[in-house]
Length: 157
Image (tube, rainbow, N blue to C red; front, top):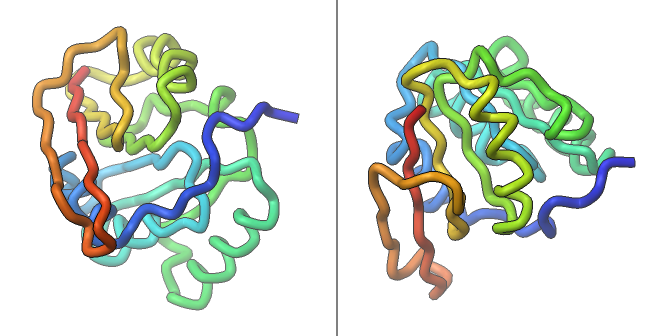
């Protein structure tokens, strides 16, 4: 069983939108959300940004919940969720990767992404940075509408 790389904590919609904007997601691009939880980032990427969005999540009930919502929204052509270990996937087709993992998990993921990601691919990290990389941009969001502040980091390969 893959180890848990982050607690499940749903990202507020406003931050989801900001992450995708911040990463410059365009229609037709391929994006992956690592540890996709209930699928909200994948769904917004497909629905609002018209991207080809894939979530990776190992918690079976969350995968089931995400897939049911994707199906209900009629997004099966452009949104999907892979059930499995996010350290064992192929991200070579990614234009954008979004992550909301703990710092230690980011450190586990970064060598794999360095190996796999094509030139120009972007990574948006929520709240926790990648210690091995230097962000090209950092954005602070003072209030997410629920009174919490957030920080986004943008990296480019």
